[in-house]
Amino acid sequence: MPYQNILLIDDDEDDQEIFLTALECTSKPVHCTVVDSAKKALNQIVKGELEADLIFLDLNMPLMNGQQFLAEIKKDENLRKIPVVILSTSSNSATVEQVKQLGARHFFTKPGRFEDLVAILNKILA
Image (cartoon, rainbow, N blue to C red; front, side, top):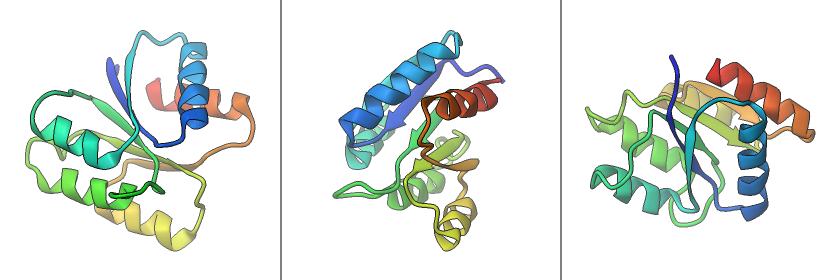
């Protein structure tokens, strides 16, 4: 399924920049919106101010963490069908299992190498 509107929810500006640069390296024709707060992103999605056919979500954020965001979006009949990919520094197996039970499509530990992030994005966007 070709994704056109991607949403990245991550509070770390460096991670945002790396993600956007890696996304450009995929040569996929997508539009990516970046929101630095899960709470803000949820409010915008619910109000219809923001549309996404794929969400990349960081877990460790203040105010509302990624797990809380995921649980909320999966409660909504219209929003639960949006695939959510977790990209996090966490690799705890219990956390991975929790987010998959909440409905995450994929879980990836943020890679240390830029090329690995590009490969992950290519795989997901294929």
